Length: 274
Image 1 (spheres, rainbow, N blue to C red):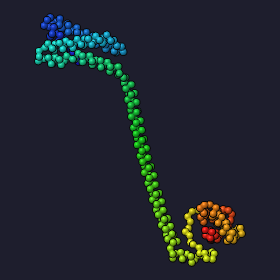
Image 2 (image 1 turned 135 degrees about the vertical axis):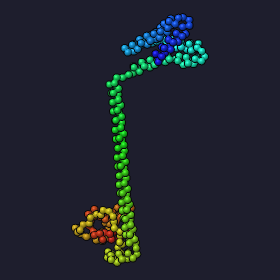
Image 3 (image 1 turned 90 degrees about the vertical axis):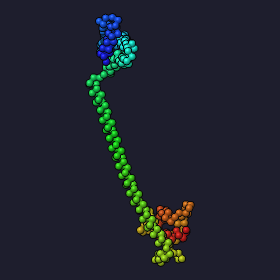
């Protein structure tokens, strides 16, 4: 673009001034304008290669560019109407060439050596590799966590189903026992095979107790209590708290206190005082 601008400027100066002076003189004027511009441009490039900068040289270069542009614009305005647009279209080339040299100088200031460019590419590639590995690790951890949660959920569902089934079976068994206990015919049958503990008292069949039971000694080491003494002890233990204790709690405290009595006598005493 610089060469085209110099050719256009030289041609315009020769055509423009050739009418008023010899063409050789006009050629010298045109070469002087282009030479001054080229000289300032070369000097500015030399300073840039040395890492230096001169504001006066830059100003002179822009002045030469503006002068060349002014010559082209003036010639375009004085030309025939048919060619005005064409000359105006090329009149900006000197300034455009100067602007491109400025851009080129800025590019040279930021230019890097091949080693630096290779180092930068290596750093960028390393960063991309680390990001890819981190993404893969996160995806793997997410899949593992999802699998673990699915396994835990399935195991919990199985445990819940087993517990529900067991609860249903226990409820059905307890309901059967309750019906057997409450049935009139079953009650008479159980009463007929149960011996009387005391006169006019018929023991009542109780449902089995689920839970820990206190061990009953096989043999009574202490002297057997009379029914009256047994009733007094059971009544005291039963009324030791409000509300009154149940049979199981009364029996546990009775044996914890060191007393001994058979299960049949103890239950009969508890029923008498209750």
